[in-house]
Length: 183
Image 1: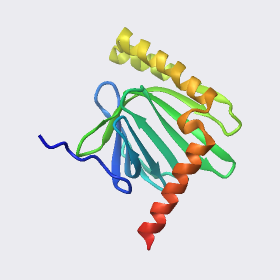
Image 2 (image 1 turned 180 degrees about the vertical axis):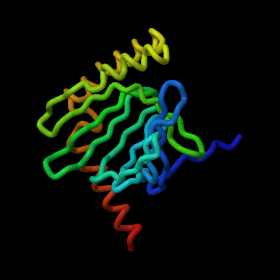
Image 3 (image 1 turned 45 degrees about the horizontal axis):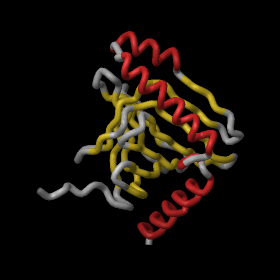
Image 4 (image 1 turned 90 degrees about the horizontal axis):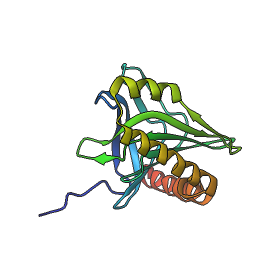
């Protein structure tokens, strides 16, 4: 059996987030892949076209390093801004990747981290409303709450995407790949 090749460094993929009921939530076109491993994908969005479920379209304003994992119930977006790095972390199912896109289920809860280190848990009301509407299981609820703790530990410890070295390394790699593509 031949193992299907995943995306390679410099390839572009589409990212699709869904809601628990299977409805499409948001699509990012042309995310550049920086690294794939057995369990994770690191990419970058920079002036990337985003389409909302209602058809509204917009373009990301700044470069953002994106991190997806096959085992953790969150993904991380590190937005590189003039005043520092801001993080938007989605509590979400681990990703799956097929020929069409990298896909995950967005579970509404988000953790925002500001450049000064302030953290905020967002959209708790939306999570509770959708949990009732779509009957999130006790197991799903428990997994998501445990993963909020893991995520906050990563933030507090400066682990992975939350370290300056990580951002510097992957942003530098992105700039190198972009220069190569332009020449």
